Amino acid sequence: MSLPLCFYPLAKMGCVSCLFLCISAILSIVSATQFNVTVGKNDMLTFDPAILTDVQTGDVITFTFVSNNHSVTQSTFRRPCHPRIRGANSGFMPVDPKSAQFPEFTIHIDNTSGPLWFFCAQNGHCQAGMVFAINPTENTSFEDFLASAQMSANTTRTAATPAQTAPSSGAVPKLSIKGATTLLAVFAIITGFAS
Ligand SMILES: [Cu+2]
Image 1 (cartoon, helix red, strand yellow):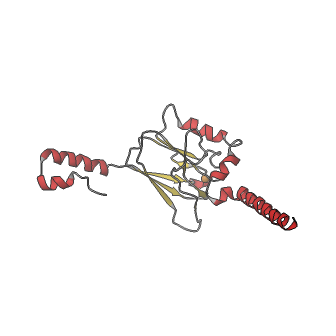
Image 2 (cartoon, protein in one colour; image 1 turned 60 degrees about the horizontal axis):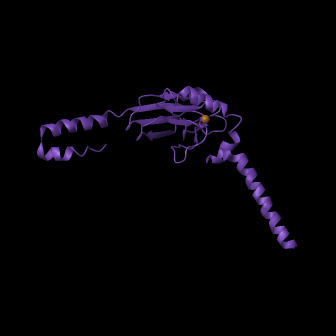
Image 3 (cartoon, helix red, strand yellow; image 1 turned 120 degrees about the vertical axis):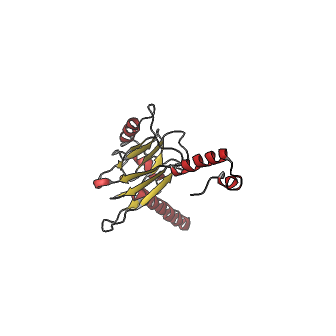
């Protein structure tokens, strides 16, 4: 924690209004809330809690991954199961069942001008309802976000896969693409020799 800038002139001049400003500035830093979210509790495909409200700029959210191999990946309200470009992304967090230690991922909230949306990028988990929201509103509600995620099960599942960087969900399509590329390359060499 760094002290607010007001602290330094205060230390020299000691004015009363400076003092109050400084105290309130320090309090605003100290009062940053720490939220904890458990990912995969009881082997379920859930974020617990799935919704955080009244999250303020400066707050911190720590995700603890307790089972399976999940991620917390930022998306958008319109496309719940697609990673947002330059969004927050934990990547996949595999949990060793033999270990007592759980992997954690922390997000520092620096913008609460609108709701923030997240999902688990593991294949099918988003469509199974593994989504998470910060400060949802009446117009962009968690219920609508969840319904939209569940509806994307049959339509965007394959489209979502190439955009995901983690290996487990993209492994099959990526392999098949690689296989096709290799075949094409071999074919090109063979025709090169033949002509
Ligand atoms: Cu998951």
